[in-house]
Length: 280
Image (tube, rainbow, N blue to C red; front, side, top):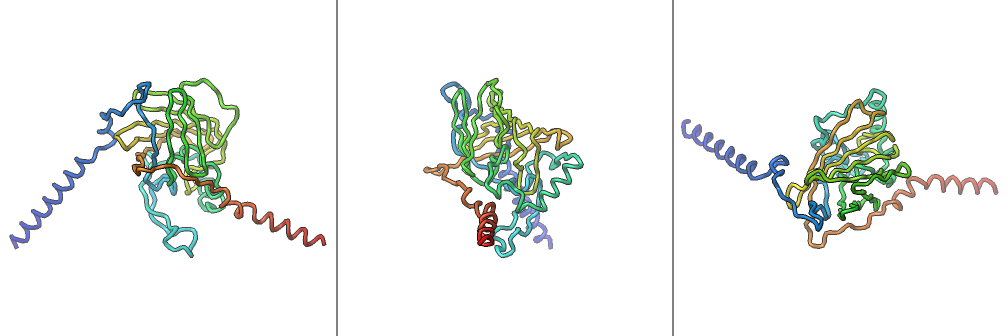
């Protein structure tokens, strides 16, 4: 009995030591703030490269359990994976009417989500979709090119220019705060969502993004969301973004419009054909 007890204690202590060593070897975002990023020619942190989020935020930015997907015939192939949320406190402060709209969106996801129709994903959703994006950095402009739908946007550094109109990807103005790139994004339309769970915004959306190098191959991405038409207060999301390390890493073409044409316009073509037939 004593031998078994001694063995159990030893095994537990050994496991605790392994966990402690492993946790101590993995830097947290807070610990990584001492990392000194390489510099570009103008002395700013170098964010150039191809990056990608490794989470389930595109399914749901809040905590969610695994569940059956929307197409039963596909079985597990399109089921929803469980995921930890990226929302600070896991709470999105919807106004009452907006909360009802979010619920309605979720119930009609397959026909209402702009992603299904290959519309531009908006900001910040473009950042954490399950596709890579590339940053091209210069002193005056920073270009972000996204694989999904060939989306892109230009960040105007230290600019006072105003957007000529509202758009899917908004109007991005950036500046540096120490080693952090801060991007103020406004002038959105109201057509994009934050995820497949129906989280949405209005045309009053204001996004502030913060990109910080925390290691040679990782960025800390923090985003503040403000929209007085939809939310009772500002709220935040935060996640790491990882560098793609393949030697031949590149953005490939994913112009998904042609994949959505039958879904969106097929019924119109069929109605037109029926109309012609009926006029003979």
